[in-house]
Length: 187
Ligand SMILES: Cc1cc2nc3c(=O)[nH]c(=O)nc-3n(C[C@H](O)[C@H](O)[C@H](O)COP(=O)(O)O)c2cc1C
Image (cartoon, rainbow, N blue to C red):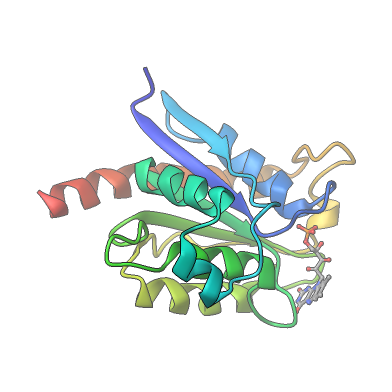
């Protein structure tokens, strides 16, 4: 049985997404015994308050419940126009409604990959701001920005860069410890 149940969300739906590759790398470097599942949010519609008033669409309800059940969430996302990709923000918006929203005190680790030199540094602070409002238990450090990401993963999405592997591994180790700390905090 897995000791930790971790879910991953990629901010990019692209088949050859560098962020999905980074997310898979993170999933492979979790503490021993942790389970990992990447969530598919392709079917989430654009948020519409009238639809919400009728009840959550099944794709949203399933994602919301899966996030609630998880011990932690790892998000790997590109930066779009210096900020959060619309699809990812839309998914967070849908799942954020209601007093029982699943992000409250949920351990969340963020990483980003970009072909540019900064590795999507700017998106992370916008995403952190969103999760601040939702009372998520954000992992603060280590931060992981994968710059020039196209040189660090091969065509099959495997990481070819030891430094990236080390940074992501360190972050996942910190996430494992953070889940324990948040559990103790909640009592
Ligand atoms: C709409 C759009 C906006 C983008 N804006 C940025 C940006 O602000 N900063 C950046 O570093 N890269 C930007 N990029 C480039 C992405 O970082 C690059 O395409 C990256 O590989 C996308 O992530 P993915 O490989 O996971 O799909 C943008 C790409 C798109 C499609």
